[in-house]
Length: 372
Ligand SMILES: [Zn+2]
Image (cartoon, rainbow, N blue to C red; front, side):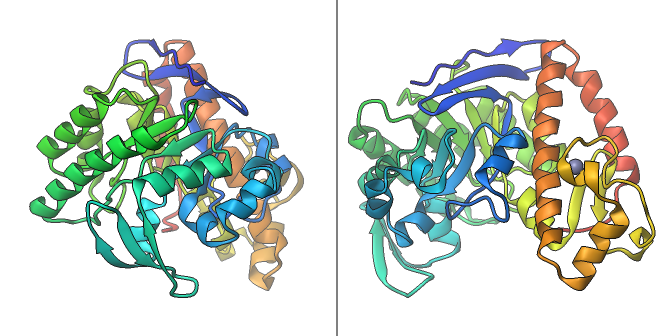
């Protein structure tokens, strides 16, 4: 079962422990993304060594390939992929809306065509819970309706109502012991966010996510929505801001009382040659690194930074060696775990505010404009 205790030390930032079937997770935490049952380019041993205590996998993708029943027959997702720590599965709602050809959404569910072979499927709240239970997820997410950004108020309002209706049905369908999180929607409309948070809080679920943000809206808007929602959510349940991956955003959200994060940025950027470092972002292909014997991030203790120069890493990317994306991913995943570890230590010592100001001034002062 999931137990969560939060300490407050000045700001709204909290320290917590989530006890899950496959292990205990210290919060605030960052969950690397293993969409298709693999954190791209890394072995589960490498992900664990980087310090990750929980990863995110995706219901939509695993339902389509290889199929949740096949994974269940193989002993569950943990066993199937060789990761013996907790797994959170996204409900697939986001992918249905963003990736698949969505054919029809009704109160019954979301009908879509697979992006793989065009086959037709329907996600209902009940099916999405059943899939995640078959996968053996430590944390399952409710099916939600996640409109794109920007979106009109009537569409956002309808999505809030449907998300609440579906959360209620997911809750009724779950087996005892399933840690089911609700997802707050409401786009960038303050009153809709508040309505969604109140309605889901009333369901007394074991945790709450804030969805439909970090979709391109200005940061001030993201933070405003997060603040309005966190004050309405129960203080003794974990809060998860979906899709937030920039260190600045994570720090701002921790300050507002968010406990969990996930994003494809560390892995996706690692594969394309952008590293997150304690001195800002580094675009490793840049010719300025061609003769640089220094480590990618002198403050990092990962295998990449202990073993290789920027010059060598750049060379790997320039000639297209598979080792390049792997080494940068390894570093980025470690960087985010290190960041969360520093955040937890700072909260514990009651110094989160001064620590974050110092981190951000160093991080912002010298990073390269690397884009995504
Ligand atoms: Zn490193």
